[in-house]
Amino acid sequence: MSQRARPSSTSTTRRLRPHYPVWLRYEVYTTPMARGYWVHNLEHGWIVLLHRRDAPASVVTDLTNAYRSLPADPSAAMPARS
Image 1 (tube, helix red, strand yellow):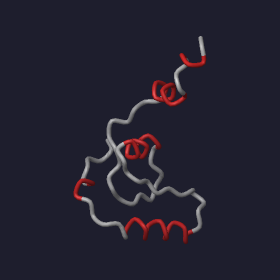
Image 2 (cartoon, one colour):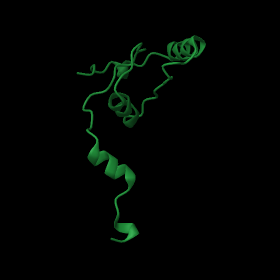
Image 3 (cartoon, rainbow, N blue to C red):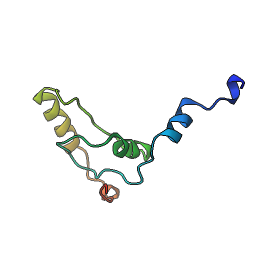
């Protein structure tokens, strides 16, 4: 198989990983969410703010404040993950 005929890693990844049919609500989460849900949000043009579980409280506070400073988006009233 020539180099040009090989599928890209992106297309290979898409075939191997399940596609999440729903996305996360537009809100702050205090527990980890499955990657597939927030990746689905990214696929639809959303911005996702993440931090490590061991992030200092100041980082979590700063990210939460950044989220809360964003204007309300009526289109963000989407269904919750199932």
